[in-house]
Image (cartoon, rainbow, N blue to C red; front, top):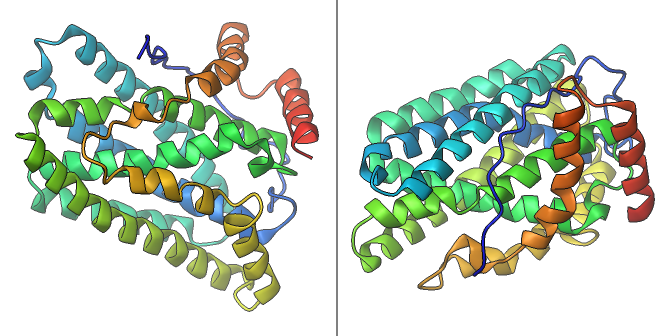
Length: 298
């Protein structure tokens, strides 16, 4: 494979105080809360990722390329954690019990960090990174995934998707360096993926169920059906990632065997320009660009 995209730490601030609709995905509560539930898991999750990779920094000190990529990975994840903290504070102000849900993630991560050895934590990290990379690919590859979303919120998710794609192979490369024989690596990461898949799926739906109780949408069965149609039929991001999920269990797998560098190139110019222009929130130009993307998706 030719050169991979550089891993760029983009210090962008997204304005969470703006007049963003409560239900910013097509005015739909359930579709919106699917994305919001994931956001609630991100800050503590990303800190866990950083710690699990940083634990092996000394083991890769003789590889300047990988060591630099780890630095980029840590920088990007730190920015994601910061912006999703702001995002989640907005959710807390909506009275949906966001802080209590964040505590669920925090307590679980702290417990796993105490019980799992460093290599086990890294195995969990590469599996969760695979999930974020799969979903990021859907956001970048299929503009209709964010169709009819408020452009300012869609911009946060596209930025996050771009950077998750840029660094999707870093934790895996560290795991390959420190994980033992190929067979041991394969068995460890396969077991971890089965665990992580169940946990991630349970946690997203658990959070959505609790949020729906807090805001009185739990019995809106049409809303739940619309969400299922969105996730599994059209645009169907969960259905579309099935092949990528299964590829994890192929011996010799690597995240960049799913080569989506063209998506990175098509997206990064916009965000790199924002960094150069201003480090203060989503500009009017970006808002209009988001509207244009949504028009294309429609």
